[in-house]
Image 1 (cartoon, one colour):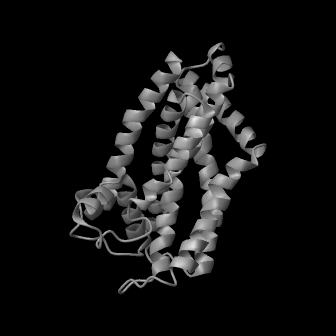
Image 2 (tube, one colour):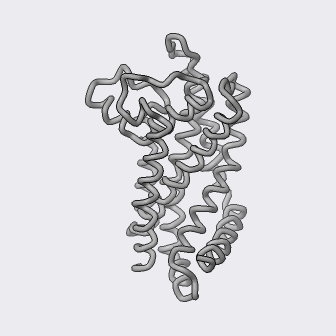
Image 3 (tube, one colour):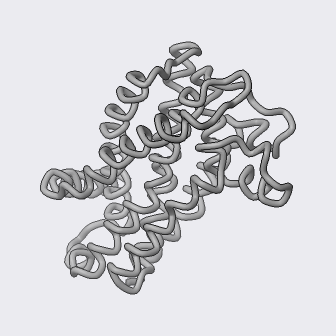
Length: 258
């Protein structure tokens, strides 16, 4: 265990140095979410009327969750890049724990995301969004965001290690942009057709978005939704735990068999 933590810390430092020399990663984790938030808040927000609710108070938590879900894209791209440029092979020739390399990447992504959420929150506050719940609830919301990001990063690492090329990983990663659209991150699901509403409400992003809104005090929990959305905190924790429990061991195993 100590070996995993020590080796994982070394890999974590390597990825953090990599972020400093790769501005594109900062663009993905910080600039683009802010741009999307401004677009949804001012362009779509001016055209949407939600009874009894301000749209910007609805969309800011949803955008925070969509940013957390982008762990799939960044995790996939970075893992595929290391795999197909020979970095992973060099790690495998060293006396490094198999779990340390993907763990270090996941932790580095988590640290980058924690920093990247700051400008997004500040822009949301400038747009008029406010935390209407308790301080403890707000801390819980940010903790849940980081937990979900950690879970989605493991999905990305697994897919990146399994990718055939960097280009294939980049194309598949771009397709994950659709996942928040099939959830309640940007719009409520109450007006969707029955089958599509079911798909959206069982999307893990919907449970996390509803939980974050509830913890921030921005929106009531719907009572007529699927179980993960009508019990959002439990649903978000359950989804995160399942994704980590499934994808982390598979990613470590895939790394060991490359």
